[in-house]
Image 1: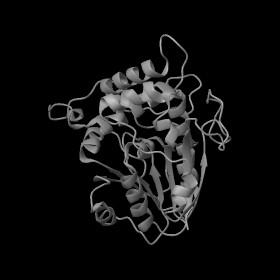
Image 2: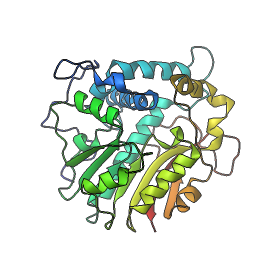
Image 3: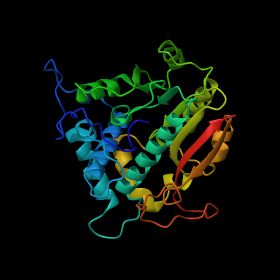
Length: 315
């Protein structure tokens, strides 16, 4: 790496530090209109990153997040905040701002550590959402950076980041991960399945039915050489049904993107697709950063909500 972790780009002014939903360069309506419910959750993530970047104790800085979030992202965040921090009564759901800050920093560090390995030549974000790591950090010149997401997401992202340049050999693919041919598109863009790769599935799996989750993991494994890395976040099954989670779950369900999948044994889940994986919970060593506000339940304790950060290597 030629820059310190979590340093903002020194030579480029990020687009719009305010948060309008921009019109396109040709004066057309903002591409945000084409985003569906799940796709709009990427704007929520960007809004959370923008707010984190403004904190004195920020875990990272993302100078692109406000433009990516837009007014819509801030509106979604307001709804999540209301559910997370009720005006009357104690918080029962995870602190979404702290969780997102820890998750972003955890995967920042994970990807930068992977890129520091001389054997790493390709990194794949699936889905890419409003991720700006290709713009935020310097990456080795040997790395090809692939971003996969649905066409509407990438169109909106391109609109909001107009005039900004990634700091890596960056390749965007407008694909649906449930479509039958995205692997062919990825190979055509220069991905080499014969050499190790690093995959990040961030903010995805809990929105998918179990069968689709398994199908995606199987397909990623099929084009990942031995030694390839994978990382993802997911919840446990109790997080999908716990009364303590009901306020937050209702927000996503009302938006039209309910949480559908969780796993109580994430290591076994990834192991079934050929990975040796480990999982950590926010608040545990390596996934705390001094910000997780809740007790971390032991893995053997049942009937509690959990979030996992999973990472592993292809056998």
